[in-house]
Length: 146
Image (cartoon, rainbow, N blue to C red; front, side):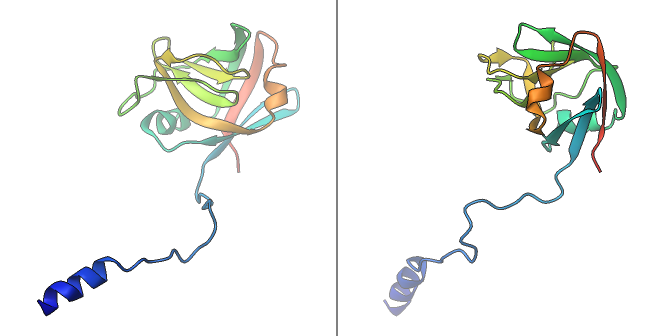
């Protein structure tokens, strides 16, 4: 009986976290920058197969186009891994994504509805205002941000 009481007591002890902060800063987050006409757009990359595959292609210089008055797109030199990727997502403003069926980047400057085949690679953290101003055919340099 004494063992049962001791066990019950130890399982009911509440342990308080040592850190009161609600958010814990991520360490070792890879950032990339998109540049054109002396404008800089910064993106924090996710850690997934598609994002890591994309990072392996950098640096790139690619022509961007507007699509559906919602996103800027460009074709990639090769398809990215879709291993462990969700079947789709609901893109939000600032999502840096890959559209697997066409093999292109899709960088959203407006929210959009659920789309099959879209995989999030990262999120814009700076320069969102510059994204919608990229004119069709503008060459954008994409590289690791140091």
